[in-house]
Length: 191
Image (cartoon, rainbow, N blue to C red; front, side, top):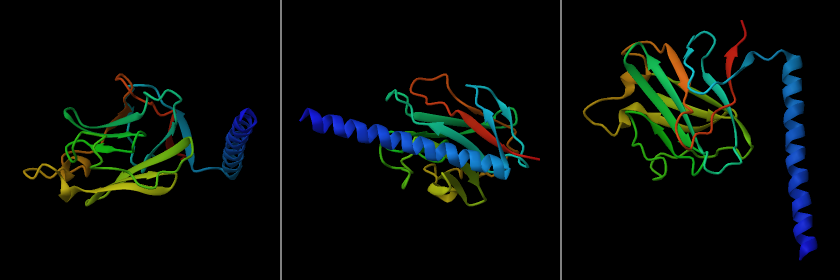
């Protein structure tokens, strides 16, 4: 029995090391090719200026945290002085909230991502058009929301995210709350 447990541990460690090595090689290849994106270190609760020329789609990287209480990622959007929106999601069940559009419970299975890759490092892309809000992970769409389906029938949340009420000027990755798994990088296009 002990031998079986030891064998499983060795296989798990070997698989983890192989996955890390493959990822390192891919990053080196992309660097040699002259990737179109530059990585920037994320600071908790720092407001970054948004530039649609270099930040569309808005991209960021998370790494699965070994602390199982740190499962949520929060991205807040600012549209001028008083308007804001927010995308929240959790790696515990992959629930999603789009502020003013969906309910706020990440764990009720009402708004759930599908097909999220199992890799520890995930690169997320957030973008929208006049009809939908999209969330992609490692190049694959894992969640989208049609603005007309807002849970608040008296107001269409589309105006918030499609910039009808003002242009997106800043964003931040929130880290001052319990349960937050702060992204490690966000990306900007090279000029």
